[in-house]
Image 1 (tube, one colour):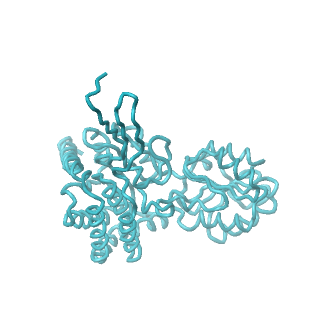
Image 2 (cartoon, rainbow, N blue to C red):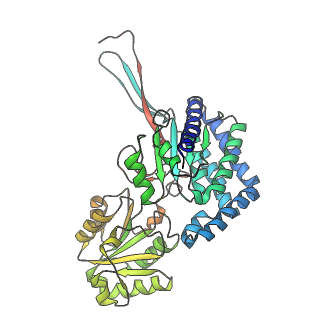
Length: 423
């Protein structure tokens, strides 16, 4: 790409960020009623214009097939009438949630008479960089709008037609309902330089949130001058404890791996206590094989089920995003916890057990944003947690962790009232 083209990309995206930042100042002052009206208008627009959205999505789907995208990635890309209706319902659910903006966090009166209050306020302009999931477009716009933030989005090239039409429909509906013009920006430039430009716009963009594979997230975290909320790489585990209900364990593992293998809350590794491995490993392998899951096992696994592929050290730290799973037999719960804390991504982890003390120990010692007992990791989701949608699932520890709803898109402001006090 020529230097002139690079300059054009920088100029275009910088202008979009400037417009959004300006709009964010007015957006931050809108009432909950005004924002909710816009969200409901946006939801209606998605439903009315479903045929147009499907036409654009069909182009992306056909391009994806020609590029040889996997079945799981095509599933993430696919929009249907039902999925668009779910996106619209998601916007309505966001409208029904309590608005965090202006909520009091703390208040006190100091000995010198100063009254100090702390309230929630919008972040300002939120940048979202994401890959082939068109639903992120609606979720991100809806959550940012309700929390009083402007948003600038850059989706992956695989979903460019879907994302452009969704962003256009949602922005037009929002502006018609009173949202400040410019508050919703979609970067339609698919070149990688677009992400590089966004990562350098710290004068305008207050935070950037990458959603996608490990490569994208690593690139943004390591190169951005804009503060980053790290999300999403999901190397998730299920540990089948020696005290597990094995029928329950099978039900949970199948759901956590098979229901949507490409999403970040799907599991990649199963850990099995050696005391039950001889009984349970053949059982779970049969069920996974029937579901056409490729199984990679440790040496102890191969001694029991020699037909399995051999797992390498790289498998323990791989997010497959596909119908592939690795299985390891561990000595006890302590080895399971150690393995998870070594190879996990801090996303979602689960133990299957009927032992209360082991459940507590696992939840206390496993370092992850969501730790389950006897439930599927697939529940790590903003909607399932009652947040409406989510802006992403944070795997870091500063500012926000786990599914990020409306509160995670706010920061704090201190309001101090005095009567002439000086220091």
